Length: 229
Image (cartoon, rainbow, N blue to C red; front, side, top):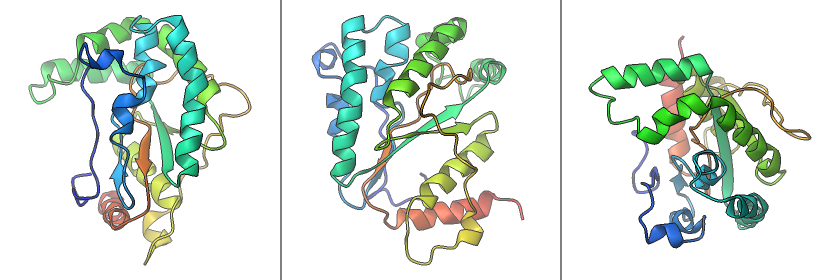
């Protein structure tokens, strides 16, 4: 995102809700950040925290959790039919890789701000997060708003694949498929639930794009810069 025009591309990373915000509807804090025409807005942890960390850590009750699973496909269907391009990405990281990253973050002074107490507690609840993830993918992977799973142990390759996936979705002036390349064959989640044991907590999905604008050309240049000759 650092090479995109900040007037039309911004990352939304919401902090822990305040006591007042905790009384809001699950989607309420996110909806106000939805993009206008031509804008790109990735959500760093989207409303799917309700189906992941909130379920596992007991931050929501069973009734609100089940209501979320019922409501979210309807909301996403409305967004898509309102001409918002909704892209949901799941970065799949192995248990060993996740532990390695947490160790590095604890000793690297540049990254020490990243782990939270909730993140550290997640390491001991891998199976619970896996169960929550599989339920989330089963109930919220729809024809209107499908999930795309990207193998994320190699961060650089995962980021390039995410950019290729996004760029492959849209037509834009001077599109060069030789530079962008073709995304890997997607993993289709329907008709059954996902079964692999992937990333325990991180929801870097739910990014939304209203309309392909100038930002796609910056993504193309970023792929060309990062892809080995």
